[in-house]
Image (tube, rainbow, N blue to C red):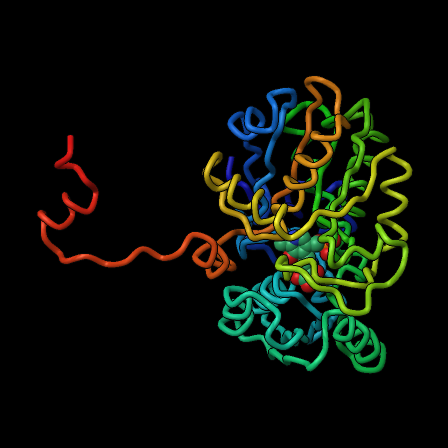
Length: 354
Ligand code: AN7
């Protein structure tokens, strides 16, 4: 049967009626890939699955929440939406607003978002406003402005964003027939960990799953306010998507951690980049650096003996690697060119040496 996006598929669990206009790009239904090569590399004791959210229409998990946030904005008669963004939210808000024929305004930290994301926001026709500040400054401004003007806020403070994003849990459980033992996820503004926990709890309340996963979240070491227990004024990490010092859903993330018996830990930039390369080389899965935080975190915890044998872990890979291709090229070094002749190619590859 044709997949018609998360609202049409999970309508019964979402705050929509027959009258709600459904603005969809057929988001969701993303691959859940068993990562045997990666599991073996990490010691062979775990069953690791990758939920490849980079396969959503705009290349990140934000589309699950944006379909609902924009549909509800339209239902409520809104003519414009606004968000602060480290990139992916702006790309998604721009695309869904284009589809809904409403305006979108995005505040981004100047010079601090990946080029692929900026190009998305621009080409979909968002009003892009780079500010001379970081994401936290941008979010504060957006909160103030949307409280004073008739513009709908579509950051994850908008409850419809969380409602839409919880469908990720539903898909995992629908495919596996149960919840995993652990749910590993990068944490930035902390909306996604909040949404997934909510989704699992709802499926358990409906009797669809018997057990809940432990939620394990990972922040970048230079931007880990929840781990430190205090706001980080100048967050810093290569994983620009999660360069956030004062997450909006801080308390909800702590609740997900504590209710599930999980944890929120930090991973260093070099651990994130190692995981980023490992995923691409071993699994054929290209993600952006922030997404690799969940893999880096699982690797770190496994080395400390945190897991039991054969524990099943789903890692959320939040965004596509093509969002930020410069990062990959920086790491690997672009190869030199050679003359366009058979002889030169054969010599270059040393095929003539047997
Ligand atoms: C790839 O786009 O906050 O903890 O403004 O783009 O729900 O914030 C992005 C966040 C993880 C963290 N991975 O999720 C934004 C923004 C990727 C992301 C996160 C983001 P939350």
